[in-house]
Image 1 (cartoon, rainbow, N blue to C red):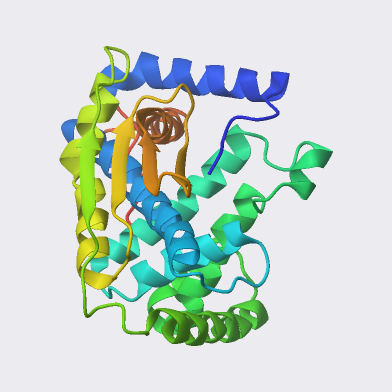
Image 2 (cartoon, rainbow, N blue to C red; image 1 turned 135 degrees about the horizontal axis):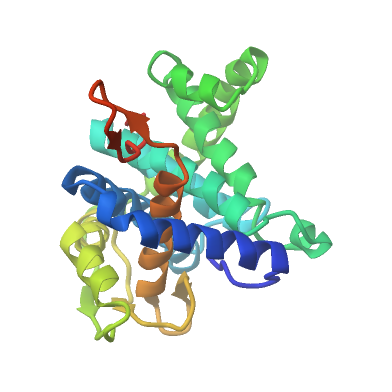
Length: 287
């Protein structure tokens, strides 16, 4: 997953506004809001890690891929979270969709002609695909979220076919005898440096890296050992390296998610109390 190429003046200006807003109003964020910011970043990081696990499984198990691999990896991440059937996993998916929607604006996804030839779908498309699979799996639970994204009723209904196809395919591919053994996985948190220390601490304390590593150990049998490395990369990114059989998560990406959500909170208008005092903006309601 990559967030860096093709930055424009519009992008730079937007990000500057977000950073300034987040910085100037950071002191106004309540303890609850700061926790919400970290949770949003952790949930988006969790989705990205399952996305990278998708790449890992495709290559190590030599699974067939029809269509773009990046889209297939997104579908794996969504499918894994949906099948957990927990409120925490549902929130992670809802916030992952929100994260792609926010980054689509911040990074002007689709603003350059080359974006349409990229190996990833546009950020907003990735958001809508997550929501489509959610409502496709469980109409009653997730229709309110699909309505928030203004997905038409007809499309919501057809999302069931999308989910059913993906579910049948992944059950067939991953339902092989992968659980009779275990995978060797090592997890390492490398130094972050002063600027990224808060992001690195927030990422480690969230537990998502160790969670995904444990699931890989217990749920799949891979011949080669897998390394999970969290480190400073010089870019907001996360990726799977097939040459080293390594999942790398960059601390810059955790920081990027926190900045995106902080900026969205700071951009919301403050409300007035009955006494006339100004209250800081509230975080987005849990979906």
